Structure formats: structure tokens, C-alpha cells
Amino acid sequence: MLIALCGDKGAPGVTTSTLAIASAWPEAAIVVEASPAGGDLAIRLRPKGSVLPEAPTVLSVVTASRGADGTDAVANHSHVLNSTTRVVPGPASAEQFSNIGDWAPLADALGRSSVPVFADLGHLHAASATIAVAARADLVVVVSRPDMPSVVRVRERLIRAATHLARMRGAAPRLFPLLVSTSRHGQADVADLGAVLAETPARPFLVDAGFLAHDPAAVRRLQAGEEPAGRLARTALMRTARTVVDQIERIAKVPAHATAGSASEAGS
Image (cartoon, rainbow, N blue to C red):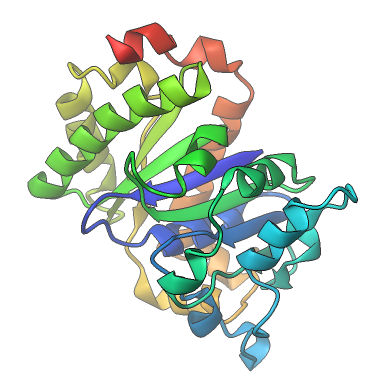
């Protein structure tokens, strides 16, 4: 399974959202940092007080994916964050990402992983290098704030993404808007977003929507490698992340053609 997470201009917390959802996954999962703007997991993560080694990174996965040895490139080039979550950090600079060129081999490697992959694609648009990864994904999660300017931007992003990804895939994409809100207001914010999106061309491709609680203290604990099934599980961040995981698992059980519109509808 490949879940791609992305955002629009000014979207908060795509990397944090990816980390939280992967850590809330009930089995092993891998976070892959593939934002062309450069990664910061190698700087932010401190499992057991230690920094991550400089290598491997997602560039190592790219190199391995171009080989023909049949190994699980993603798992073999990942680092341990906690007992269930591994990470593949991105290089710190955008210049290093520019050496990738063709992203299709990486997209295929992520999709073939024996362990579910949650890929942070950063700011996604039609001309983004990582659009090939989004097109390969089983679900595309689009992260946004709940304020009106952000909701308007995510509405336009979802409309454009539905059309472009459908054309690339030759099949309907499955889109999941995710708001970074508060435990108190999250459900109401999701309902408001649903009303905004109800009459848009993207509506047939929206398989669900949800929210993650803004919880900086829990984020710091997660980045330090604390076990997500321990005391961290009681935080607002991880409680809402488990709810999102439940939603994703329900979506995964339904055939893609039954949860989204057709490619011809997206292009109309």
C-alpha cells in the first residue's frame, strides 16, 4: 500500500501528518520523505537521543529501484524510529533532489514495498516532480488548515489533482482532504469543508475527510522516538491519527472503482 501526503501553498504539517499517521498504523509502516524542496526529518528526528545517520536517504532508494535485484528497496534503506515505524529521510537540499530526473522508478519501488509506505510529497501540483508518485498511490491525502483562505486553496488543489491524476492513471484517483485543527473544532471544520467541496468537480473522487489535532508537545515526543502505543497514544495527536488510520483502512477494503468517479468524469 502506498499513501501519498501532500499540501498546497502554505499548508502546515505535511511531514508531521505523515509521521503521525504512519506511527498510528497498527502494523509496521515506513515514512518516506520525498518533497522536492528538501527534507528535514534527518534534522528533526532524535530516536533514543541520537541523530539519524547521513545515509541511506530516499536517493538510496532511487538508486536501488533502478537495479534488477528484486530486493525491497524501501525497507532496506530505512532507519528505525520506533518499534513499528521506520523512516527514509530526504536529503536536506532541493539541489540533491534535482539529480533524480525520472521519478517513475521511485514511484514503482514505493508501490511495491512489502511494508505500507506513507510518502511525504510536500507541495504537490501538476508540474511537481513527485506527481508520478501521487499517480501511483492508492490514496492521496491533501493536508490543509481549516481557515477560509486555506480551504479555498485546497478546494482548487483537489479539483486540479482529480483531473490531472485521473489522466495520468487512466483511472480515478482517491482523494482524502485532511485538516490540521483542534480536538474541539476538528469535526465541525471537516463538516464545513465537506459543504465547500460538495458541489465541486472533485466531489466524486473524495473518499472521506478527516483531521489531525495540532499538538506540538506530542509531535516532539514522536520525533524523539517514543513508542506510539505507550503513553503517547493518549495524546490528542495520536488519538486523532488513529481515527484517520481507521478511515484509511476502511477505504483500503473497498475496490477503487467503488469509491471514486471515473477518469472521464474527472476530465469533463
